[in-house]
Image 1 (cartoon, helix red, strand yellow):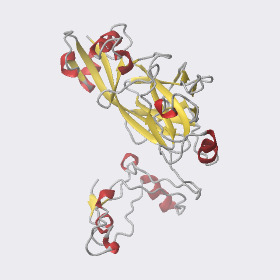
Image 2: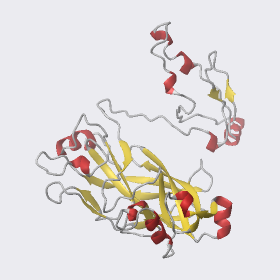
Image 3: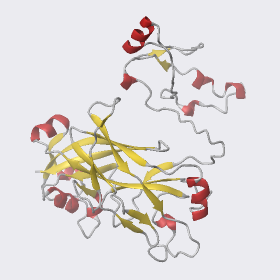
Image 4: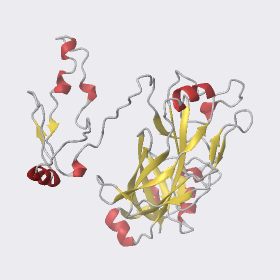
Length: 336
């Protein structure tokens, strides 16, 4: 892949795939759909202080070199633009991790979620290294295969303080605008992860526990990642259920809605994620990750003398209705 000089005017740069060339050869080539993206654009280049005036504010953006056309599907658009035909839409939804619910929400450490191999020893060692059970260490550890413990808890909604998360605003700004997710598409590297655990019917998230106390119930089920990702090698997606996020703002609640929710305004959906991990060998850890790493290098102040093997991988989450996206690093770890 290379860049094209865009200092002049590039109208269109196109190449045909092998399939496209075959269709053109037999005379039935026809473009029926197209997509737009802005992978190359750095919007910080928009310069409202340009001395030449407003006509030049976007000059550097317009002259940004662009990718030359490519036929590989994984070299196309990574950051596609989205169209919302509803002209009354005031806000776009966000997806954010909830790390406020101490009884269920897993915490990240330096932007990484730790996933412990289910061997009876790794989770205990990690919890101890992160402060112990009494010091909140358990909240930093996802235990592979666990269906009712800590999970990666995600919320969607309007992350704005302009509109409180009242039931009326949920009806008008979420439900009436079609911003509730039907499901989530969770992409994982199938070399390491065999299933994505997600909510089942009956799982819930609300703040109806009296005085605004949060109520969350999960009994996660396994969803097999069987939808191949054509842009990322070794990745496949599992379809995971989305629940209705019923954390609401109520004037008389003692505990406010934002004490339990990471979304500041009206809330739409939620999901909870954990993972099943394949039986990983020392060769796997050596080839794709790190081996014999001292806990003391990962966790400041650790004196256990433990060593571990780990693999870092990415998990991608996409909303099935709005396309909201969340990517995070997951460290699969096994104590030696």
